[in-house]
Image (cartoon, rainbow, N blue to C red; front, side, top):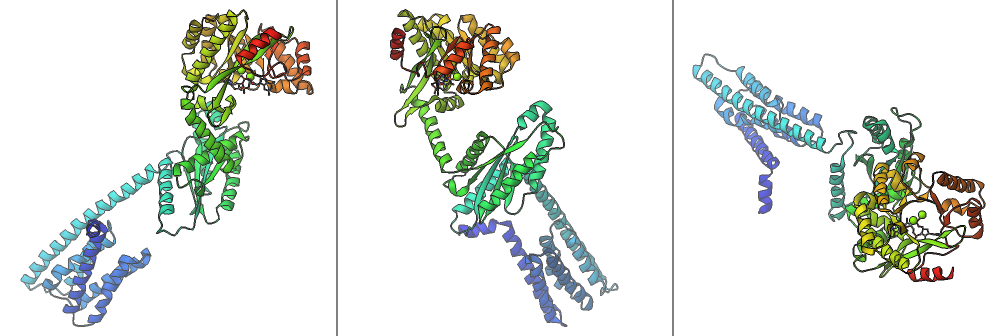
Length: 595
Ligand code: C2E
Ligand code: MG
Ligand code: MG
């Protein structure tokens, strides 16, 4: 019963009911009223059925014209009484409204019907004439009104189709947009989950990100950026087809959905084309701006039917491609899957780790090169995970930065380091304590008050506290960082630039920066003994620091030869496994006594 109601509420179904009813009425009239060639008229309903249901438009039109000609000529040869045609024939134009909605077919057919009838009209018979005029007006009025209604309905329908298309199209590139992408994902999920649909395709999702696009946008302006996106999209469009749909899902992010029985070869061919397209010079940018693409691919079969996971897998693969040096493609695989699972576990567990006191600090001595005695320590955080064991900060700091947990964690580190620093200073060891400060703390925390409070609470003299800021943080937002460093220095704390040299250090900022210490990155120290260029870089940084009145510390000293270079180059301080790995506060106590 509900099925029947559903069917009745379907307008399409009602139209067909009316259409069949009209065919029945007209055929019945034709067969009963005509005396000659009666069976010829049986072709009328057959042609009208072809006109309604044949998939080819031209055959449908041809059948419709032919069926009308049958009635038209029949009417001329052997006119039937007005009464007989009055009711059934009024459905002829209405049937054409169903066949060709919004066209002039219904009115034309009504006119032609009247015209054919008028051939045999006896003008002397006033009663018949009057009846003819009355019926003609009725027929024209009904078919005209119904046609007009159908015309506007069709127009509205076309408009709605157009609006719908617009809402699913990216305004800039005219590719499908994100909304359409999600709609298509839903369709795929439906097909894959529906046991009634026999599905022989595999599906791949290709995530494309343009490397270097941000630079173009920032340096050449958004207008040029837009033109580049349009040009790239036009190239991608060449790949579109029955098996391949292309979407722009974000600024410079494009996604391709591929369906195929043998998915890998076709996806690899597409990837090669996309990498080529991205590199091909663009009309609107000069040659020294280079663009490439980083591509991540994941298969639907690897996402446990969760489309959100499917997209995430492709994203992860894409980031992996970026990390592997850009301009390449990476397929999502089991290793990435394990890494991702670990990442999400750490992300989740980090939320409670601080409350559950799973963090602790180790301290690595900071040693004066000339005397080889400890002058300070760097606090380095460790996470003892209840099931995964010791986790390196290299792994979890970036996760904590991403979800801003680093702000609370950073406060805890700062308080703990200051408390420990105060204990050493109370015990007569006037050593400085360095604390690493993340870029997220600098931009999202009131770092000035956090540091002030930590000093106040611990009672540590500000001169014994050093804050280490990475070069990347500085280059991200130089003005903001410089202002904050100035404030912090006002408290009496010292500022160090960590990992100096690995990023594009700007000498302009170095001049403005209120810093006390430069820490030469370990990567320059590593080969400084064997590689003359690295040695020269170490020498240059030390001289640069000294010329600017800045203390220079070298990181990662692992052997005597490296230390000798520092002595020769008059570096101030060093840290490294050669002297000591990061150790507990108690071990530092012992080192302070022994060394
Ligand atoms: P970093 O601040 O540059 O710290 C130096 C890193 O080099 C430490 O790794 C240290 O153990 C390691 N190291 C020191 N000497 C040697 C050596 O001779 N050889 C080798 N191979 N390594 C040496 P760790 O503790 O794993 O920290 C890594 C990075 O994690 C740190 O780099 C820092 O950026 C971040 N980090 C560590 N603790 C914290 C923290 O408390 N807060 C924040 N925001 N970041 C931290
Ligand atoms: Mg550091
Ligand atoms: Mg460092």
